[in-house]
Image (cartoon, rainbow, N blue to C red; front, side, top):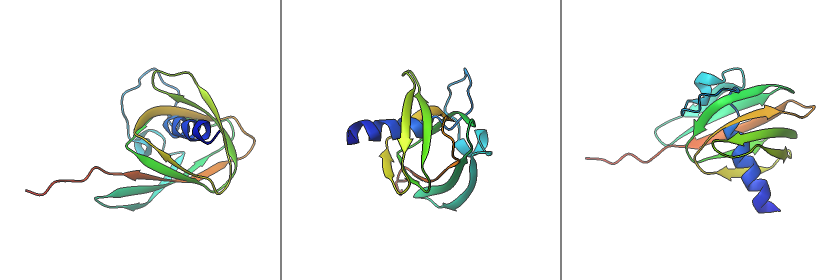
Length: 128
């Protein structure tokens, strides 16, 4: 069950982009500023974002590097990962999830505004 929950959450974060036929990698801040409310912290190692997805709201196709998310509220998302069927994710307040790099989109199919903190991990830069 935990594996299914983790897979569902991974799909969920990819969903946070608008429904679009264009599945090219895009920055969630650029394509879904209505959902990705603000960057809380960004440096050479990570980017931390505040996410709020109202009932019925859609996040278009977007991409994330490896990342993790922390749910501030309960919610229910329909997540579609590139090349895969949609998955329903029941998210519980206080739940933390680690997700590998993905391209996805999402829709809040629940009755509550889903609030999360998403932290993307940046690739290490080599020094020359």
